Image (cartoon, rainbow, N blue to C red; front, side, top):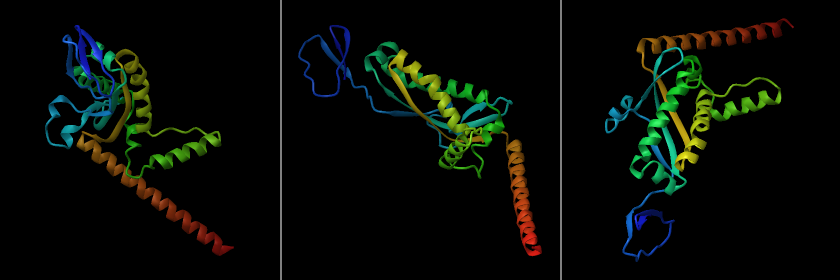
Length: 218
């Protein structure tokens, strides 16, 4: 509960409290539970779900993409958050800073690296983690999925800074999907992916036929 005693901010912890002093005023409640915000441009708020909810970002190779993402946060120090930010401005600060941070991460990443994490035939996060562990055990190089990499970079940039400066804890970011906004480029990449899949299938069939022929000769 947010109160002011003799004009001084006093945050009461969870529980039952009795306010008896005439100069002790109740000002409202402030939730310390985890909350989420959709990272969408202001003009999309209140509009239908879908493309309007996509956050537009530009990649390292100047390709415009749309990303659907949510950021999760909680208030770790209510008094500090109110004094440093203001109760009504907390969601705005979290959203605007998160959008700017995500834009910077995307701007430093090439389209190809992002597309690998959203390919229809891409491995699951669990399967990819197993591959990473196997590669590490063998002393081989391994690269994380882009969405995992972006998640780690995002939290690394904001978590400690927000907690120390504002009493706010950025707990997670969930990137659900991305879309290439240039339709012609999107169709071209999709077509190339189909050709690559067909080539891989043909090579696999050829390898199988070669093995069968070799076994028959033996």
